[in-house]
Image (cartoon, rainbow, N blue to C red; front, top):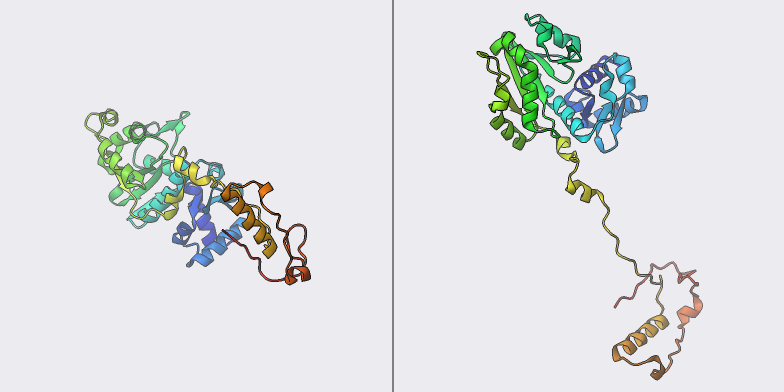
Length: 317
């Protein structure tokens, strides 16, 4: 494993553990789709990544990668479709935001230190179990000593509930940093982006603001969301359920592989009798006379010519 592959695995792990072939190329794993696929298959054989069964274009890191990098092991767990979508969105956001004059703080302790170095107390950070909790958020160090915090839109949750949770968790940091704190909620769909634009000033969100320090949350829509994000089926989607079910097969008509002239004559007589409404007792029996070809190449009981190599023929009405 060279330095480029190690850096790729580290970034994917810190961003949630998922990536697509297109994202792996953008992360400079290789300079062509063929080579990127070869690297990913090699990592898959070595046990460091695995293809997600439901979405073959998506790769996920494994427990071997988290042990190698000594990173959080939650990234290698199995997640639902909405969580996979959210973590792929985080990779896309990183690919766009790294072009800004900003640096990402990946390690959890590094995220905490980013705020502590700016004079923010530990208890001002979002808490879980009495300890600072910044595992899900992306923390960026902007130019002019600004700190950015970005969360990814979870399509399983309502936009208003996500905005309320975001405002509640970082309300004390707004007091510490003021306008130096930039809060972003990242979306991959225009419809969700428009909803967030309407709700950022909702009273249920603004009630967490401290007097004199209004909470400002910026909805950010990805310019180039990867194609794989649009391929992920949504849970409880009727279209996905219908599309996943096979079409009902029509009953097959059992016909013999070869139809001889005698057989054809018999079928013609039977159809004529049926159409005329005449019973079989009033119709003279027609004894089929085999042709020379039939007597030369007998037909097996299952209806298959045992010697002829000619393609099968069918006589249709």
